[in-house]
Each structure stands twice: as C-alpha cells, then as structure tokens.
Length: 75
Image (cartoon, rainbow, N blue to C red; front, top):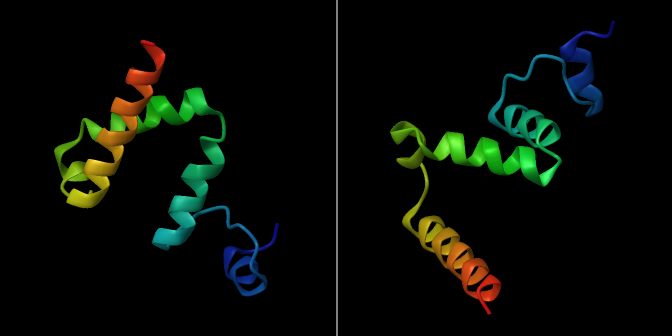
C-alpha cells in the first residue's frame, strides 16, 4: 500500500483525507449518485454549525434553485 504522503506528491487520492480539499473530494466521491447526495445535503444542512459556514449569497442561490425546481414541476 502506498502511503498517503506519496500519493499527495503525485496528485493521487489519499486513503485518509486531511486537508479540506481532500475531505471535500472524498465526500464528492462518496455522493456521486443524486439520491445519496440529496440525503447527505439534507442531513448536513440540519446542523447549525454547518449552516453558519454557508454564505448568504449561497443560501439565496440554493433557495432560488429549489423554488425554481418546485415551480417548474407544478406546471
């Protein structure tokens, strides 16, 4: 097994993510299907400490997208 340090040097995915980018990539890899991603997003947004890190601009964007989806489905 190749050590994570060596994998970092050559730009491969690591087994134990440490940096924020590595962690984000690991989560993205585990939530490739839309149904799984939706469940994870819903669960994460129930955590107040998580929502504190979402910028007001992103909150507005998400609400706009969700509203647009609901509006187009009801037509």
